[in-house]
Each structure stands twice: as C-alpha cells, then as structure tokens.
Amino acid sequence: NAGVMQNPRHLVRRRGQEARLRCSPMKGHSHVYWYRQLPEEGLKFMVYLQKENIIDESGMPKERFSAEFPKEGPSILRIQQVVRGDSAAYFCASSLLTGTGNYEQYFGPGTRLTVT
Amino acid sequence: QKEVEQNSGPLSVPEGAIASLNCTYSDRGSQSFFWYRQYSGKSPELIMFIYSNGDKEDGRFTAQLNKASQYVSLLIRDSQPSDSATYLCAVNRDDKIIFGKGTRLHILP
Image (cartoon, rainbow over all chains, first blue to last red; front, side, top):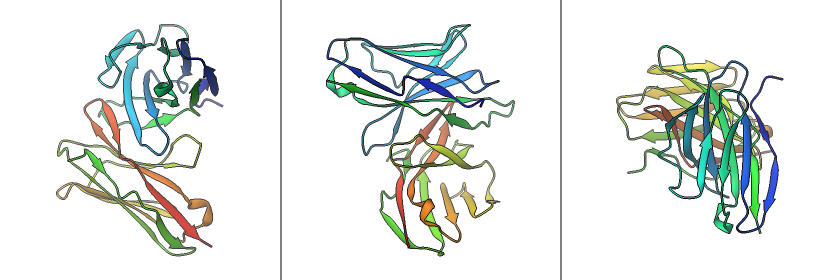
C-alpha cells in the first residue's frame, strides 16, 4: 500500500509536553501539506513543504509550531508546550506537482491529538 | 467574503434521487477544483477534480465548473446510504488548496 502514512494515529499529551506527528508521503510524491481540523470545523492549511524546504508556512501559528521534511525520513510536525486548544485532528496530504501546476492532494488517516 | 463557501446543511436526499452540492469561490485566478468526501472520524478522500469549464463525469458523480460565475458543483446520481458524509469543496490558491467547511449530506433510506 503506497498511500500516505501518518503516525501515531492517536496521541495524548499533558499540557506543556511536546507532540511530534509524522507523515510519510505517497510513493513518488515530494510535496507534503499539513492541515488542522477542529471538531465540526473545516480543514485549515498550516504548512507546505518539499524535501528540505518550507515553501509556505502562512497557516502555522507563530509560536510553538514547527515543521520539517528532511532529505531522508518522514515529515514531522512538532508542537512544543502543548495547550488544550491544540487538541484537534492533524492531517497530512501529499501531491505530485505536475508541470501544468494542476495537482491532486491525497490525505493520510490523520493523527488525533488530545491535550489533557 | 470567504474564499470557499458551501452551505453547511444538512442536505437530506431520498435514496435513489440526485444529490446536488454547491460551492462558490472568490479567487478568479483559481485553476484547480476538488471535491472530497469525509466520513465522520475519517480523513478526506478525493472523489473528483476538475480543471476546465463544463462537466466531468465519473460513475455516479458529475462535477460542474463555471469559472465565469465562480461556481462549482457536485451531482451524485442514484444516491445511496453510503453517500451520507460531509463533502468538502476545495480550490487552489497559489501553491495550496483552500477548503470550504463542507456540506453534510444525509441520504434517507
């Protein structure tokens, strides 16, 4: 199965701890996107990365949140000093950007973060 | 004005009927349009994409795009109970995709 993989699927953290969410894109895809979804809310764009580069982080909170996509290994979304408001589903998507600029994003199963 | 607008619903449609889901967008420069289906507690699943004006059919699904009116729709023929889900309209803006909040569709058995 060459789909987008995310782990862990569920993550519980106490306030003040760090959360690390991992995403491996679909085979052959080199573009990764992170989204956050609050209950009964839409998907909110957070960050767009290519290998070793952050292309667009306009949706990332200025503090405590960071993302990377190293040359080897999965993309990681890191949340430091988590607060209850960080509780949400975090989805990763990947795409194969075509030369025409048209592309489709495919989503992983998500990580449900609960901050207690 | 929101970038991507959808009626939140719920939209109730009898089984076997046609479900019509609508979406408007604000950026005239958008070129790519997507429909995702999301079941409760699950991740979004891409079901249709359309890049040109007109209709695009795939099985029971038809996507319709009217760039002049900045309007995109999804028709589901012969609706089934398994079609009950939230349908997300998404539109590209530069290098990213912007999602609407989704329309909840309920197919009545």
